[in-house]
Length: 410
Ligand SMILES: [Ca+2]
Image 1 (cartoon, rainbow, N blue to C red):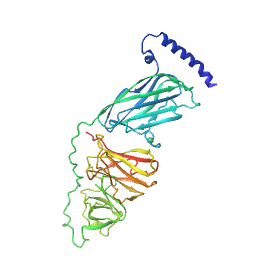
Image 2 (cartoon, rainbow, N blue to C red):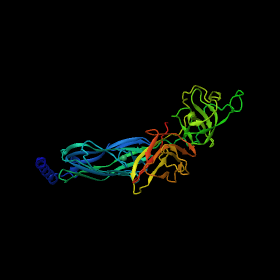
Image 3 (spheres, rainbow, N blue to C red):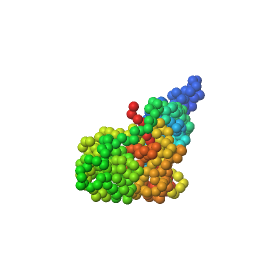
Image 4 (cartoon, rainbow, N blue to C red):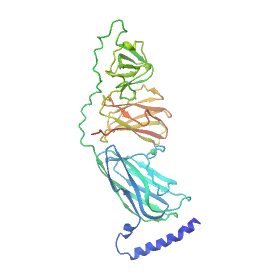
C-alpha cells in the first residue's frame, strides 16, 4: 500500500530529472540544484583540547530511506569524541533527519582517522525529503594545524534500495595550537604552604615523642592540603610506615612524610598512630578551609575511550598519556587500585612506552580504579567523571583510558 503510493511520484521525479539532464545545458546543474551532502559548517576552528561539532548535512533530497557516509580526518590533529559510551569503540551521533532505526555501521578509527556511518529506516517510518543532519560529529583538537574532513564515499538510497545521486562537499577544521606555551619550567614541586617550623624544637616537654611513626591500615592518598579533593601527591600502602610531623588544625588530618619522601596530609583514621593529635604542631596557618594555593600548574583529565574490541580474552587495560599539545608523554606513570585495594606489584604504576602507551593485562572482571598519574616522577592531579574513575577489565575488548593535560588558561 505504502509502496504503491510512493512509487508513482518517484517515477515521475525520475522522468523530470531525465528530461532536465537531457535538455539542461549548464554543466553541474545537478549539483547546484540537486542533492548535496556536505560538512556543515564547511569550516570551523577549535583550540587544542577543546571540542567542536559539525554535521553531515544532506540537502535537497527526495524520498531518502537509507544513507551511508565514509569520511576521513587527520588523526594527528583531531580525534572524535565518543557519542555513545554504552557501546564499545567510538561512535558519532546520528541525526534526526533520517530515523536511525537500523544502524549498519557506526565506527570511528582514531588511529587512521576514518569514520564509517550507515543507517537506514524501517518500514514504520516514511521516507524523508528536504534537508537535515544525517549525523553530528564532535571533534576534539589534538594539535595545531588544519585537517580536511573529506568524504571518501556517500551512498543515499530510497525505500527500494535504489541509489539517489548526490554531490558531496568536504569541510575542514583548523586546530589552533596553544600559543607557544611558556616552556615547561620545572614545576615548583608543590610548595607546601606553610614553611616547616623546625619540628625538633618548640614542643612542650612530656608530650609524646615527635616525630612518631604511624602505620597505614587502609590504603591512603597523600594530599597537598587537608582536603580529599586536593591534589594527590602520593600514596601509602597498607602496612607502610610514615613519619608524623604535624597535623591540620581542628580535623583528623595528619601531616606526614612517607618513606618515599613525599610530604602531605593523610586521613588519620586510615593510620594506626598512638600519639596525641592535640600535641602535634599544626601545619596550616589558618583554619582547615582549603587554601586557594598551592595550585599545581599541570592538570590532566581522563579521556575514556570505552572498551575497544580486540581478539584477546585477557583483560587488557591501557591508554596513552598526552600533553596539552597532544603529544604523547613517554615515561608517564599511571597507578591503579584493583578491587578497592592498593595493588602492590612491580607493574604498578605502569610506565608509558615511547609511544606514550601504558598497559596492564589483568584478570577479567577485576575492578580497576585510577588513583595516580606521575609525570617526570612527580604526582600530578587529574580529573575524571566520575571520580574516582573505575573500569572493569574484560575479555574480548581492551579498556582504553587516555590521560590528557588540560590546556593551560592563558
Ligand atoms: Ca562508544
